Amino acid sequence: MAGEVVKPQVTDVTRYVPNLTPEIVKKYINQNANEQEIYFFLELCKSQQLNPFMKEAFLIKYGQNDPASMVVAYQVFIKRAEKNPTYNGFKAGIIVLDGDKKITYREGAFYVEGEQILGGWCEVYRKDRSTPYRIEVAFNEYVGRKSNGDVTKTWRERPGTMIRKVPIAQAHRDAYPDDLGRLYLPEEFARDEEALPTYEMGKAPVIPVPEGMQGFRAPTQVQPGAQKPAQSTAQSTGNGATAGAAAAQPAAAGTETGELATEPQVKKIAICLKELGLTTDDEKHEYASVILAKAENIASIKDLTKREASTLIEALVKNIAAAGAKK
Image: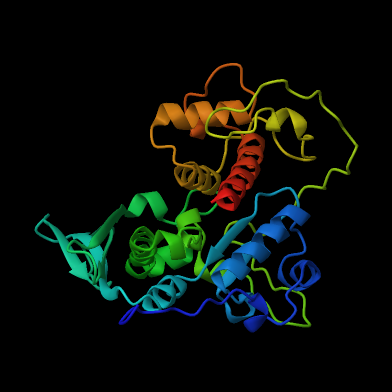
């Protein structure tokens, strides 16, 4: 059709990373990742043309029994959007309680001593839309914290810069769900950009230890066949939740069963449930309860233990991948 913009289709990840294979991911990107996590990471890089060796994509997993996070740098959202002919820029800034106790919206990340940063905002403009996509987020929901609850150094020293990134990513994701729908920032999982791994071909990955976790040692990985719990006979729900996932998983050695889920785990679960189209608390709790083979629906995601949260995250990521494959 005359005048129609035709975008080139790029599907081969080797255009960005020659010979990116599971072996390369295991050796140079994350040695703790299992086969499934490596597969999902490769598919993410392939579908989005992301190059982990240019700090575009990160596979974060500190221990073999920890949940994996697959995140990207926030500039990736802008770069991807700029390739779309409908993109018309964005505005972003911070929400501040000023000296007169008035809530103000500012572009950029500037604030003065005595003012309190309440959150961040972003508007993304499309040429084919009359209304911008606007997102506002609360500072307390995303501020990075150590294991003892203290704010991390990066968020303490650069709070405006850090919180501004979150709505930029979310607004761009809302504006271009087909291009950016599976991409997330480390800040959305309460991680600092400085804590991201460094990848270089021919060298083992450099994975910084998060602030407050110095001396941390990952639990010993359970060997296959060491423990085989009884399988649940529960059926799948209409939303596609795989029942009995918790019963089918062996207990992770060294994992405290009574310790509550961490804030990053809770945030990741919330994002995954939203990705699956679950909007109400009742839907989310029922879905999670079926996966964990609970006799009764859970009252809150925050009530889960670390082990339950880890099992749930693994199942949710698998279900999201399955749902995407059907589209």
